[in-house]
Length: 149
Image (cartoon, rainbow, N blue to C red; front, side, top):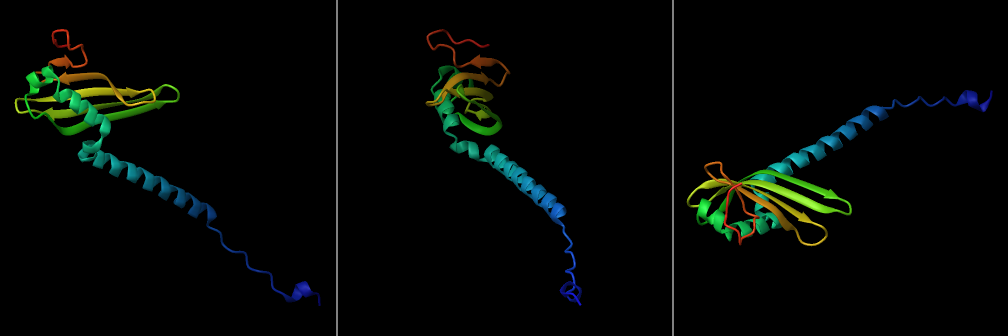
């Protein structure tokens, strides 16, 4: 008898490689999507309070006489309504926010856009929408009389 006739051939293993590979990939994608949703929820609820760029915009807003006249003292963010971020290689990055504000006199909405070409973020535009839906360009020169848009 030949040696190969005496040893039984191994039984081929059942492979679930494709199934487990697809399920594993799906689980990774679901975990990343879930993480982004959780981060987004946290940012819109609490995270914006520690955002340096938004702090810069709020500091400028609080010293703006037009914003003070419209909203009053103690201007604070009530909620974050939107945030967008974009970066273009060689052109810098831009971030914009829309936040709901409250002062001791009225409520309003601020849309602010900041841009950086490598250094600190600089305010490009700040538009305040007052309680009467009138819009105020807060980036207009302070030497000109304040006017609405």
